[in-house]
Image 1 (spheres, each protein chain N blue to C red):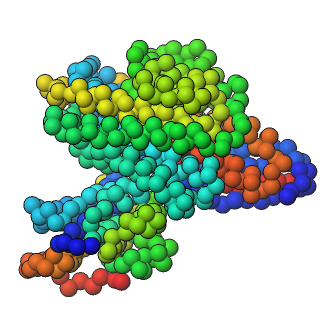
Image 2: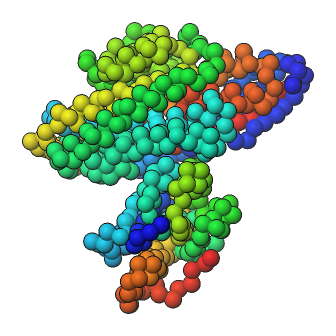
Image 3: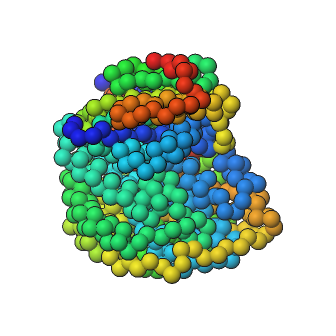
Length: 174
Length: 435
């Protein structure tokens, strides 16, 4: 793909199912950070695969932020590249959605619509019960994840990384 | 090949390409079908309890989260119910925008179901993704059509997923004339694509099957429109009722094998809602291009083969594109985006035709504007007994098939109803037990 990189950040989840809504919280922070920058776009989705694929069309770099349930401690942040994605889907990176990211990736592959760089930032949830609001460890992890993503997006856009983010330095699991 | 009367038991664990988590159990004893149970084991979602204590303004946003495929249906039924409780009628321009928004959802939902969930059954593929390798042009066309459905929801509803512009009384914002002119350009392409999709679907090999003759079909009815926002509920058995009469004629009951309620008539009879029922009761109100195409493709109001429901969805998609185009071309922004709605201590009911069928809501409001009670009757709950009955009818005539073929027929038949289990309890595995 030629031209300046275009980054799409997609959240998948339901804010009325507790920690399943962490992706939207991360994106809300990022929207403020990149307000007015049309090289970066954001979308809060429910995981329906066609919407996911159509949302990332035209972007060379795609991040998918989703809650995970893999048995790791709540708030653990997973960063998974496409090459590792299929294996990881089996350990819960897919999140709680009946039709989800795995189908979106396979559909995009069948239609030659995979972005050059697709990564998933998964945040391990504590509760997926009905209700709004995040659990404490997941709310903290959302801040760290947003800061990590902001830094990474800035680097991919050859842009200076703003200083002073609270989550800098916290380890991200691969 | 199996022998009809040999005791045997087999099970199929995963019926895919439905919305939500559930299963199907088929029991065959001495070569005769003994039982069919559509099991829904997705945890109940307690949305009705979740709504209690919330403000009367919140149901459109909260209930939209019940389903990612048909949030507009939940918003429309919720708004109408609360407006009825508050004694408010919306302006014609607001209702027209609601109709347009609903067209977008029908296009999105029907096109997704046709291309990725159901067409693979007819063409012999295990998934829409596998089908895309051999039918790429058709899948690409479907995705382009769905995208225009998304676009309608985005223009009218503020965003493509879980629209945010809808409010009790109308909308927070209405589209500009310029945005609607651009949408009309897309919709002319959408209508042409929808017609091509219907012709493609009409050529699918269709199993010869007919709904049981004693299956009432139930749908909304409008004096002039094919119902998305209907006024009366009618049935093939002569029922003709208003929205507040729904609980007098239809009930829901708990069954052991499902976390979703089962809907029946108050007399305990199963009934069917959804595209086949809508078409049977409202074909005379299809938009002209859709009506002409239906006739050309051999579809009429007497259609009772559930395997032709995919064609009905395709015709309804043409209709939705046609109606949406008409609205977009004639659009001028309404004078006001919403009518004021003051809460009062009262109860109200609302209904609309979700892509999968009738969706009824009722809310009781307290004097302080809080929701005292909420009841939501989604289409898949209503259809569960009918699906089981139709499957029993189908399987009873298909016991000569071996286990794999029987499984395939059952899966395809379940998908005739596009069950949204996420709505009903809110996946489906299949077990066939022969003994």
